[in-house]
Picture 1: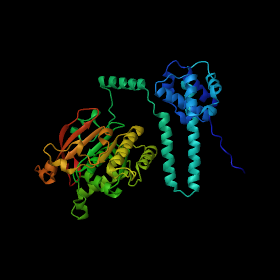
Picture 2 (picture 1 turned 90 degrees about the vertical axis):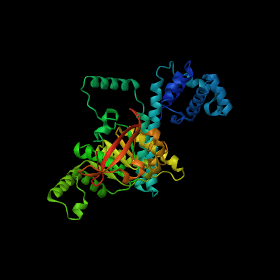
Picture 3 (picture 1 turned 180 degrees about the vertical axis):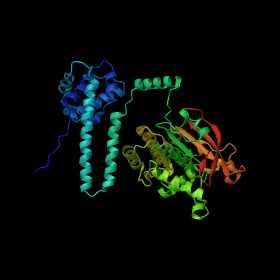
Picture 4 (picture 1 turned 30 degrees about the horizontal axis):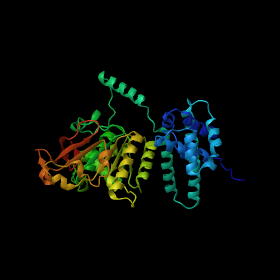
Length: 441
């Protein structure tokens, strides 16, 4: 049986019609419209690819666009033979009578280009596997390419539709019937400072603190509230702690029992009961954990898989500076790229992303405490984040913030909402961190 060769799809009629509409338009409005849908690489026929690239060049330089100006640019670039000179250009112009359907033609060109891209991607994947490449690597690369194609098709958002949704939302709020969908942190005084009382969909919520101040534990407190209490599916990328350690921490917090008491065989019967009840609840919670990625694209691929298979409604990444990036990039540029991709991921999946980040501990020693400038190798996280929460011990010394209130020992940590895209910034507060059980209040 001979192998069937797939014919790459294209539409000569649509390609020529788009160019004709651009040349017939009295201004740049047609080009401005179609250029948001297609680019020269989307044209299959070389002649049309050349002509549209020249139309693009003339428009970008604010030159008039018609048969004459296009022909002159064709001659200056030495493309007269490829486009068949003036007769070739005129035959394209004669393709349509009017320009009203220009977007329709452009969408056809785009759809055919996407179809060719999928075919080429599939061929490359087959050749890669047959050539001995690792299957997981090839699958990850394919998922990224498919995601890029999907982004191209679905990235346009109607401003009018967004206005209608906002009108419905504000009306519901004014009538006291709006149901807030933000992810609660479980800490009332913190939620009050955030828009809609929590972390919104599509937002990147950065938690940054010096070592031992509990940034990972604060994230796990949020996971406990969401996944255990509210049964909200959560994904976690943990690059420092294995799943068992994560579970131990959550059980301690949920049961309010330090597991060392179990280990040392000094726990009371009531404490043991609380621990095993917490263990059952945490084990049954809709939490999925990943520990290893080779780069940010693999992280995004695995997050998409979590969304598809487990319907996650929030994601925790612990932490930013541990995500591998291209070694040819500087550390700052690499982390900036990772930061951008994480923001894109939050918007793509339309879920809150809780991103942990390192901070320069020297900043905590200032009287004013930490600021966004103390984020370590922060790249562009200051721009990409929607909310940045900084927390630290007074004077940078944990010993200075130990408190005993007559019932329990805890750490009193300062926090600041250094950035808040949808609300007030530089709001200050204090956390009560009962560190022996990992609970924030």
